[in-house]
Image 1 (cartoon, rainbow, N blue to C red):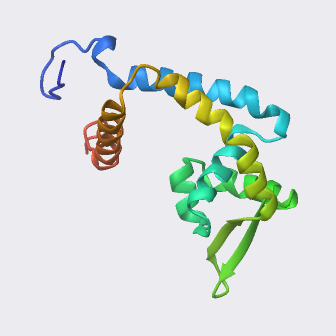
Image 2 (image 1 turned 30 degrees about the vertical axis):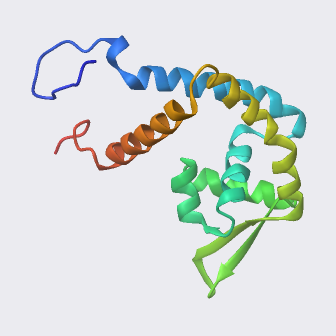
Length: 158
């Protein structure tokens, strides 16, 4: 396996670039889930918010934007739409707009329970033939890479 050295002029091959595979995996999995959830009247971004809130109910908007990778302005529109459909509820903390927490309503929790089998089936299909041990290793390595990406200065040196 090629371990890149940013000072080297060695050629980087697509087959040695993990992000190439990650992009394919994420894009195709999202496409399949997106197509399956259309019947529930939610977009991929709506689902991403509901999915995150199920685990992080009561998260502040700034953290939800960071975790969902949704621009704060777009997230605000999504939350307004979800709120109108009685899927989420905003609660201000101490009267400060920056500390508004977002919660799933009973209807939002029901939507989560209805949809969650879809991404679970997609994940099961993607992990076919991979052992539990390999999955644990994969998740550990991906978390490490995620942390590294947010700390990395290589792509944008100053």
